[in-house]
Image 1 (tube, rainbow, N blue to C red):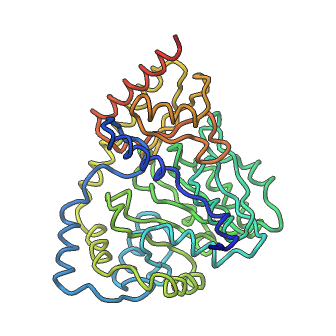
Image 2 (image 1 turned 180 degrees about the vertical axis):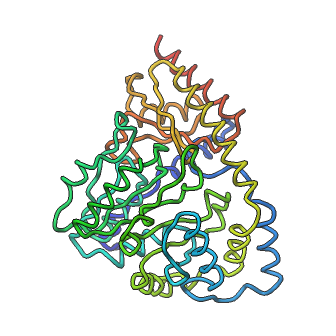
Image 3 (image 1 turned 135 degrees about the vertical axis):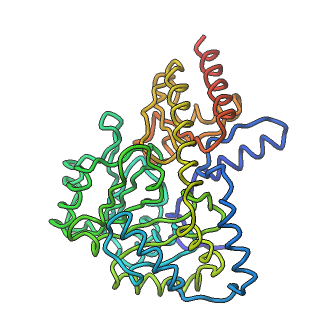
Amino acid sequence: MKFAERMSRLGTETAFEVLLRARALEEKGQKIVHLEIGEPDFDTPRFIRKAAADALEEGWTHYGPSAGLPEFRRVIAEQWKAERAIPCDAENVIVTPGAKPIMFFVMMALLEEGDEVLYPNPGFPIYESVAKFLNARPVPLALREENDFDLDLKELESRITSRTRLLVLNSPHNPTGAVLKPETVEGIAKLARRHDFHILSDEIYARIQYEGRHLSIASLPGMAERCIVLDGFSKTYAMTGWRLGFGIMGKELAVHVARLMTNSNSCTASFVQRAGIAALTGPQTEVRAMVDEFRVRRDEMVRGLNAIVGVTCFTPRGAFYVFPNIRGTGMTSAELAKALLEQAGVACLSGASFGAHGEGYLRFSYANSLENIRTALGSIGEFLSVRAK
């Protein structure tokens, strides 16, 4: 079978590949601690599950509008306007099955062949993948540990050209857990206004932040029409399998993204959207408790990794990942990740799977129990200690 050339430009997510290899080892009897997948280990709160069940019984099983249920779009707009000071109403919101379609549809709607997309490196690999798939030119922006993995404004400005069409931001950040400093966000906004490019702000981890308040670039003066805010329910409400996301964008762009929804998915499942309304309007105590637990796990991971010879670990300010520097082990990221899986029973990701600037690091998700985290830390320490002898 002959495939379209564009398929050779489409990447993947390494987390799912590592998960498959880990499952294969488990089938052979090996015990694995899963720190590879970015999925909360908590159940979706009961009141959200009940809202979905009630919606099914009430008949919310038919097609809905491609852009999303009007009430759901209104609730999202009201909350994000109040919580993040983003000027918007229901017409600015498009609901999608998961948040990734926003990334895909926005790039499809904005990018011509040869347009340039600036994106963080290390960073979520799908940013680069989609840009390449559309025959745009991905331009990496290095995030460096010595700068707390913050974006370097001088480097950003040096990479801007007449073909720069879009900048992708992600804060709190996957894989490092870093949060953009307010002065950095303000500096980026000035550059976007000066050079006339759009910003795709991936804020999927915005409610999992351990200090300070989240600052959305879309809330700054003159930025709402220039920004597309990507968000969803997977991380905050432990709803990864529900596939529920949305974007907040200018109304002209929203019309085009809704048409792309019509041409691809038709609509997002109506009963799932009813559950989303319940999630946003219901009690947030479980969300806060989840973040508190993540903070405890983060501290355990950072402490434990920094105690291992050859490893140092930056303290993340958000999300649920650590991104330790493993250069002191003398192994590449891929070598150590493979060895930890096969010999130590710990599944993690090579930093290089998040881009060239991730080499020398690993990504561990601490969306797992403290007991399993401690087991993993012990196994990592023992493996590296034996190897060093």
